[in-house]
Image (tube, rainbow, N blue to C red):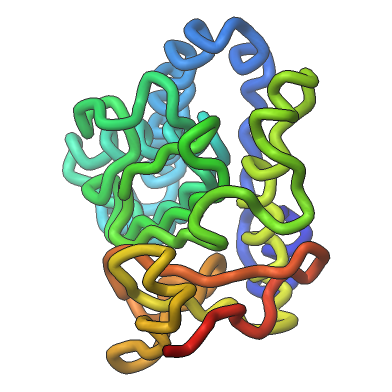
Amino acid sequence: MRDALLTREDSNVILTDWSGGAFESYGQSTGNARLVGAQIAELIKFIIKRNGDSKDLANRFYLIGFSLGAQITGYAGSRLRQEGMKLSRITGLDPASPFFTFHDPLVRLDPTDAKYVDVIHTDMPLYGTPQNVGHIDFYPNGGADQPGCNSGLQEILAGKRSCDHHRSPEYYIASVYNLCSWEAYPCRSYIWYRLGFCSTCDGKCPLLGYDADRTMKKGSHYLTTNSKRPFCGKQNVNFP
């Protein structure tokens, strides 16, 4: 992801290695996530202080997190907001569900954590949350059963990592390279979308991934993907 981002813009990319706290029992890891979020907030405050000490500088920070990492970005954003600073953007890549879904916004990613929060759901309701937690929530293939992946339950029983869950960062990275369209459409449900009732947007359609903030749209948006990279392509819908 770092290399992909640097192809699109001249920026400083900071990677957070919290493997020491992540590879514990899941319950312990969720607790460690809060501490990591607080540490990231402190790092951002330190950088701001060394570069003019203006709270407005928080608007130059963009956080991206996958699974528990998405919840960590929420903790960091919430902590900064309590001190009068607001991150520019957060992208949540299939935010972790257990211990977070439908819990208080104080303990999970939510739209108040940055000026714009965009979320990609790919493995609900197993590892990823089925809850709308951003300003805009993208549901490729309905947010589950991604093309090219086996059943999520089968993978869990076989002790394998979830292909569906890991599709979210893969889709995001593919969107950075911008090789094909990642347009998504607002709709009341994925079924309605597949039936062709939601084939237009009010103005420009939002793009899943890196360019999601071009339109600053809100709500639930749907699209279909292919099974192989670059994943995006012609939308597979049936028009009435």
